[in-house]
Length: 325
Figure 1: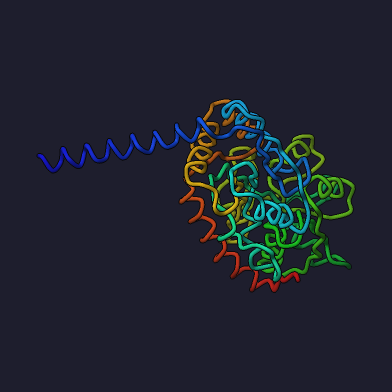
Figure 2: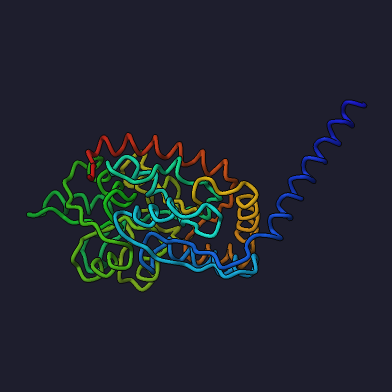
């Protein structure tokens, strides 16, 4: 009984010290505006999530959280900027699964995604969806595959950039379908969607968020979601697995990271406040409206996810023979 009471006191003391550290840090941090770098142009999932988080976080922390879009090179330019920023918690990155993929795609990255950053929390998971222009006569995945095989020239699919998940989804789809597709990289969802609506590209594998308004207005047709279960936002749309591509299961996560070396108490404060924001009913409703599934995990859990993804996508990148100098 004495041992159990001692252990209980130790646990309570540890919790109290942990809370005290967070509270102490919160009193001294932040004392000035913060910047959240989005490595894509405005209008895409990363940008929409970042702005929703920044709005609530500004109120929570009592300091402005400014969203700064720095697109280019498959989201690696913005990441490189944050990797060299002062590790004080005032410059953060809205990272994504794309960065775990870029580790294997880009040969000369100036940073190491696992070593150059300190994970804070995963904000949300957003399913990807295969969409085409609604003017096309194609109505399902098997019809798309047949159209690709019959086409005189290769059908083009657009992505958010070389080495992004959308790029990898297109190559994996082509390989599993036994077809040849032309990849057209863009700097983000907004310019890609404009060309998809205009007929410059035949299809995309973008996240649900930026294409949802056009699916609802029947300007784009959703053929399948890329995760293993149907999306609650598009329950009538089958999965690629259901559509004949067995085992297809890929989605896009987005999360916040700080430069490596950011003090632990600052990371703890940021994590606690972000998780609290992510759990707010109004934030969760906002996520549901754009087809995102809110997460809000620990830095350790996010780090483990990055390690797993880096190894997983290294294999797929090698199989697809994707490499960028």
